[in-house]
Image (cartoon, rainbow, N blue to C red; front, side, top):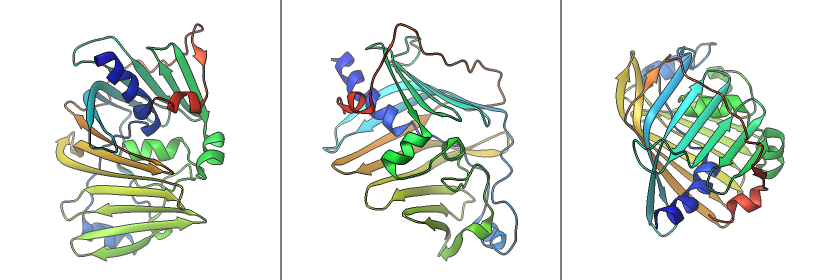
Amino acid sequence: MVINKIKRVIPFVCAALLVGSCSSKKSVTAAVDDAKQERKIDDVSTFRTLSMDKATFTLVNAYGNQTSLNGSIRIARDSIIICSITPFAGVNMEFARIGINKEGVTILDRINKRYFVLSFAEAQSRLGMAMNYNAFESIFTDRVFIYDKPYIPMVSDFKVTPLGEQVLLAYADNNVSQEFYFDAAKNMVSGMISSGNRYSMRWNYSDFAVYNNVNFPKRFALKIAGPDFHRQINVQYKEVELDRDRSFEFKVPSSYKQVSLEDLLKEL
């Protein structure tokens, strides 16, 4: 039944944090040239708000089975990311909502009237990564970032390696590794972050289109791996708008019950 599929998909979509993106133009040649200069890598994304109102999220489980839902993603720059999940395109009924702000992540499960809150401090103790809001917004907007820093990094922070028609920017600190790949078509096409042998996220972008002189990938794939856990989520955008005035209010209803991460992930 549709409702059962939704109950299975929502927790994973929440865990995956629906990582979507837009990308700014940058060629392989430019990236290599930038590596010789002391300046910020990606300081051209000057949007105030970003809206992707029509999106399809497809969960692929370990056996290759797929389940799809619809929804939207909205970002208020340097403030909050909100993802809304609905069962069908054009249906206003919200089944789940995810909010990411400077404090951490909040997940509303509309079906079961419950919510989950994960601070970035708790995420660090659980995952071994000092992730912050800047890291998530950078992933959503296809910017290079350093996982525990609140600012756009310098090229000199990375090891730069030309790989044929691509260029790799790599960063490693303690047990955390990051990689960002740029292709010859002036797009940053993939990224990776891992914490030792415990957890890893890998993402890639395709089907780029130009909006307001900025390249946005209309397709995105994210793979998450951990101990006894492997899942993939594919995201396809149909509409992208920059600097549209939207509501970014995010409140937890007083009637909702708070649950633990373990409770939320039981349905994965």
